[in-house]
Image 1 (cartoon, rainbow, N blue to C red):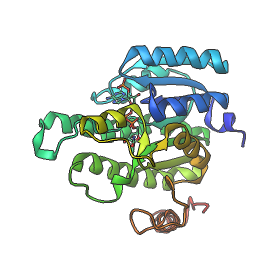
Image 2: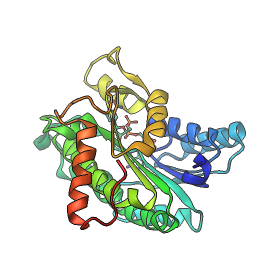
Image 3: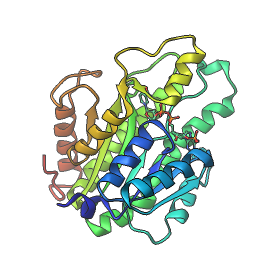
Image 4: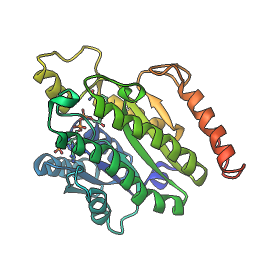
Length: 269
Ligand SMILES: NC(=O)c1ccc[n+]([C@@H]2O[C@H](COP(=O)([O-])OP(=O)(O)OC[C@H]3O[C@@H](n4cnc5c(N)ncnc54)[C@H](OP(=O)(O)O)[C@@H]3O)[C@@H](O)[C@H]2O)c1
């Protein structure tokens, strides 16, 4: 299926002003999708939006929405209005605190959970329904290798990413039979402004093996039809972080879906 038909005419990128989000935006525009770009800071978002319109000749709108807010997904839906959003990229997600669990205010963890769990879940509900009705579309969740195990030092972050992984896998199982692709793009260390800032705050240099934001976005777009998981730097059959390969996970979810749905809506492996 033609990319624009399958995932267009509009893509919404949440966390779009820089890093991987901005790379997704540019690469999706290059493939002819119109864009709704969301982040908090208006200036970089507006500048990127204008630049994309100039460079790629697509329609691009920018909206300042704080994804930690309870009504963020409602605002995303409102800003989209009656535009057909065929691709939802949920990119915002880093842990900006740099703190251990008990060493910062609880409100910071509540905000992290709200953005990475509640807003992700609500946005998938809001935009996934129309995609299923149209029998096409895609949802791309930007994940982290931290999702595969408890990570002292980033406990809440890892927990939210584990939620996203399991949630996204199950969504893939429910939506793939209806023509909607879901991908958890599990990233490793990636050179983004947010990651540079976190490293600098800890007095650490950026590791030389950091992935580039453009390469990560390219991989995500390429692998979107081949969910539910893509681990940066690993083949589907590599055991990777968890000792359970992407292919094993896919097979297992297909088996669970087979049981849960009594043989209806079978997954095309
Ligand atoms: N970089 C890495 O090494 C790495 C490794 C593994 C996984 N990841 C994952 O990759 C994704 C991108 O990470 P990143 O390093 O670029 O940092 P990030 O802070 O998650 O993403 C930056 C983008 O998200 C926006 N954003 C952040 N918080 C927001 C909020 N509350 N509401 C609306 N927009 C918000 C930022 O713009 P504003 O500040 O203007 O809002 C910016 O456009 C995340 O999901 C992260 O967990 C990154």
